[in-house]
Image (cartoon, rainbow, N blue to C red; front, side, top):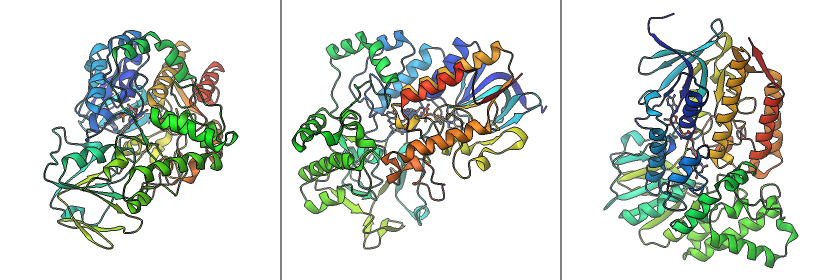
Amino acid sequence: MSDRIASELDAVIVGAGFSGLYMLHHARDVLGLRARVYEAGDGVGGTWYWNRYPGARCDSESYYYSYSFSEELEQEWEWSSKYPEQPEILRYLNHVADRFDLRRDIQLGTRVTAAAWDDERARWQVSTDAGDTVMARYLISAVGCLSAANVPDIAGLDRFEGAWYHTGAWPHDGVDFSGQRVSLIGTGSTGIQATPVIAREADHLTVFQRTPNYSVPARNAPLTPEVAAEIKANYREIRRKARESFGGFPFDPSVRSALDHSEEERRAIYESLWEEGGFKFLYGSFFDIFFNEDANATAAEFIRERIRAIVEDPAVAEKLCPHDHPYGSKRPPIDTDYFETFNRDNVTLVDLRETPIEEITARGIRTTTEHHDVDVIVFATGFDAMTGSLLKIDIRGRGGLSLRDKWAAGPRSYLGLQVAGFPNLFTITGPGSPSVLSNMPVSIEQHVEWIGQCIAHLREHGVSSIEATEDAEDAWVDHVAEVASMTLFQKASSWYLGANIPGKTRVFMPYVGGVFPYRQRCDDVAAKGYEGFSLTS
Ligand SMILES: Cc1cc2nc3c(=O)[nH]c(=O)nc-3n(C[C@H](O)[C@H](O)[C@H](O)COP(=O)(O)OP(=O)(O)OC[C@H]3O[C@@H](n4cnc5c(N)ncnc54)[C@H](O)[C@@H]3O)c2cc1C
């Protein structure tokens, strides 16, 4: 063993966002493990530490975009509004770190660079960019699905004389857009949140759009004391509903088919959900929106009608109308005045399908037809989702097997929790689990608690390692693909498929089978003595 091996731990947890914080609390305070978190950022919070762009906020409502594991925490924390801004969510996660005394076991500013399984000792040897090397029985990835920022490789960026930023690595002291000509590239959820806010601050904003997106109004509003009190009084039922739902949202599930209603009835339902705002439009309207193209087309057309009604210039409205993918098959954005922003005099839309970017120059962006002079470029171009951060770590399993090699043709896992050949490595919200298709705190808590229960079982039974079998993994990968093929998700070039990253193998990565059926499957596997895993004493 090298001299640099500083300590021996039960568990190393990588990442201090929603997942890593709860995993540390659970591992240390419930299971009694010696656990340490390594976090690349200089603060806790994960997504909410990094994404400080103007307009950043959650799209899940605050009362269910939060932890459920502590009733005291639930009761004492006051959310200001339905969709709080990033600083408030970051304050919440910092409060969690303080309240549960987590900081003493978190090493900030430290990136895990490599991890190798030592078969003889049945432990992981974990190395960091700070020079630490530690041995740990369990390696738990909490690296996040959306934490590896993707800056597109556009020729000439290095020559640009203005400033440029990626929304997922935003400067902590903010960016002053006043008097600036700003360009924003990307119209996913982030671009849609940022556009109205930047437009209000900047001298001029040019939005570069490749794919027009369906967006529904958020209808943000303060949480009145009455509403907050009612939520707090009903939290157990709210949490139960969320856990037992399809998407992790505490809504009554829709049992209606869009096709069983007359045009008039359907419109009334869509109109009322449009007025209410938020994810309910997708998750609470008609169940067959996800599966049936004709059902989906009714929602898609309704949204297009709304865009045409809001945007005054018909040519701009047409460019903003989504046309090449079903509604909900990409991450559904919700917005505050997104489409309205294109009625401002200081906002221009550039359709990259008509006029693609050729290069970035010293002074701006050149498309096939014109040069746009800009002072600032904002990349709202998302992430190398689901696998990006994990594969940045050089992870070597049994016999030196590299995770990068194993996943070269797309991620393979059993239940999104473990990978064959990588004993005692757990992946919170890993590919093959509902993760990004759900309200994530629900999926995160389910994974943390399942992993905790599994580790407790191993310790009770003197088991030194657990590993998914190849057969179980193959069957699960096939199942994930089969379920996805029954939905409309396959019809979009989305980051769910890795389509935003050049060269990434296109495989549908999250599990579409639903949060509750998935939970039942995981519980069933555990109840059957960890069926599909091999346990070694
Ligand atoms: C702008 C934005 C808005 C979102 N809104 C919603 C929403 O409304 N509802 C919802 O359900 N989800 C939303 N999400 C998804 C969000 O990522 C999850 O809800 C949740 O925050 C994920 O928590 P996490 O701890 O799993 O990952 P993260 O919060 O991403 O944390 C992972 C942490 O791991 C660290 N890390 C990664 N690799 C290493 C390494 N090698 N070494 C050390 N540290 C490392 C990162 O620095 C990061 O801090 C949103 C995401 C974004 C980007």
